[in-house]
Image (tube, rainbow, N blue to C red; front, side):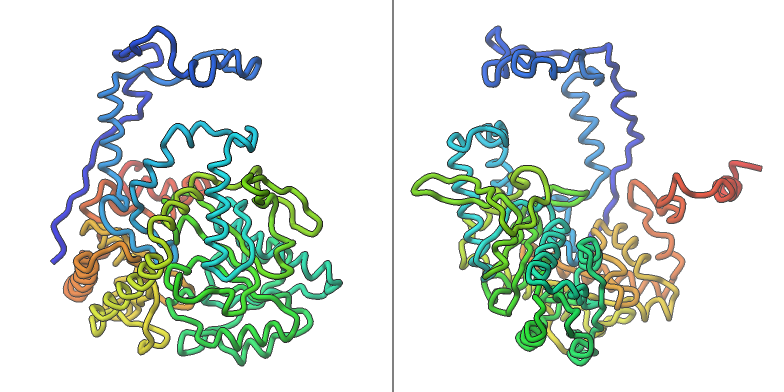
Length: 513
């Protein structure tokens, strides 16, 4: 049975309400008289001149222990991968090795500046140069650009590369991007931003792309296809070589969304499947923490002629010296300032260096084993079903449906997710992919042991049993969290909800007669 759990709930004021800009906590001075930071970088006013801040930051003065307690209480009202599993399907929230955090926190990395001379950062450039080549080898590509700052930026870069490739060849009529309905969620938006018209390809009953539907839409207007493999259902597109032949046969290109690489790395490579452009989420597959908007890194790779279109700059090596090459005859330019998000890239470098090729393969295999162990625990559990090819093994993730539960008790996937919170477990991705009703998309990755998977499956069984016995109790969840169930409309649109609705809520809560 899942353990009993209660989340801390503090009536915690804002930090400005605890301290004042006019107060000051006990300050322990450095042993020597000079400021240590000035010794390292020089006095700010001397270095920055007119750019230096002319007045003090308007931050409250607090003793160190009071500030520490304030932020500790806030963390106690939160949940993260250090608290328990975060099995968000498609988002790949691994437990991240702390050694990587310690390494990037060293002053030799923290104090680097993007504008300093390349000769002073040769160690860093060598690490990034090696990272690029490792990623190219893992994906079966020829070169990679480290510039895109996140997965969506990598997607956009790949779509722009395909667009410019066709334009340079005079194929200006190729304005359609094929996107399976089992693709990663941002693919249609990225392709549309690149100027393409989206053509959706349906999923067959076995959970893979409908090849007859693909054949029906291929033609001289086809620029390419954006494909996630394994797809968002966690099913491997086993006819991918045939897909590649069909798309290439009409002059189109294949783009690989690397969101799901965690299930196949070290086992099979996108380049060997026929893909021309690949983007990778360093902050998913290679264990750099992400969430809440970052930090991300969306490396984009290419092979053959498509290498010329990669975002610049690219890292080059001249004898024993590494440098950035800004030359750009056919490239799409930059997709952000400077060179990319260096810290997540370095975390990816440490992760790959620590595991090696054999370890990366083992990580992929273990992620697949964990998913299919979970599937075995959920087989036959009343209230849930496994849509699309239930006989097929899943790779790194699986999508369950709570549709039977909703039909028989009125309890939805959203209710199940909130009930999981009551048991101290993070909810999975909900209501995605859109082709699965009442979807619960679950991914444990390789970092969770069997005991955690068993606890999660037991919690889902317990919630279903409670739903059949007393559905209203599940619909009232969560009760054990710092914040209880909120009004979804009011919570999601606090600034756009009409005054009429606000009045309705106040009257319902007895705050307005």
